[in-house]
Length: 129
Image (cartoon, rainbow, N blue to C red):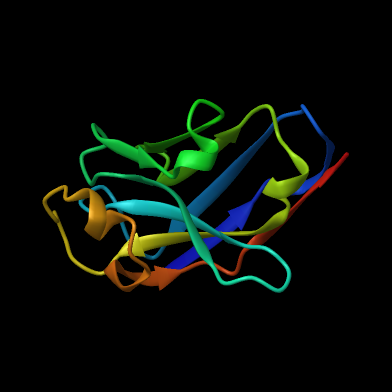
């Protein structure tokens, strides 16, 4: 199982980016997926997650209304659309896949790092003010 995140870069505050995470060697259609981020000097934090069926999403409060997560099972790709970016969104963004197949949606579980057994390397997002 390999996850490869891409799409990061340098953007001005108020701009947009779309992150992608492609899975190889494995089909993630039956797995919940998530994005986490880690800013310099801070612990990694939850950003957004999508249920294994794709019908339920959850986002952390600081990105609600600005970020949206989705998955395209035909392309085996997870997305994070980020709009109205702020300087505090600057971080390395990681995609992650659930360690358990077809996990029922429980918000607290989907926001916990330990739920995810597979992680990509991360992509840097830098927002200039």
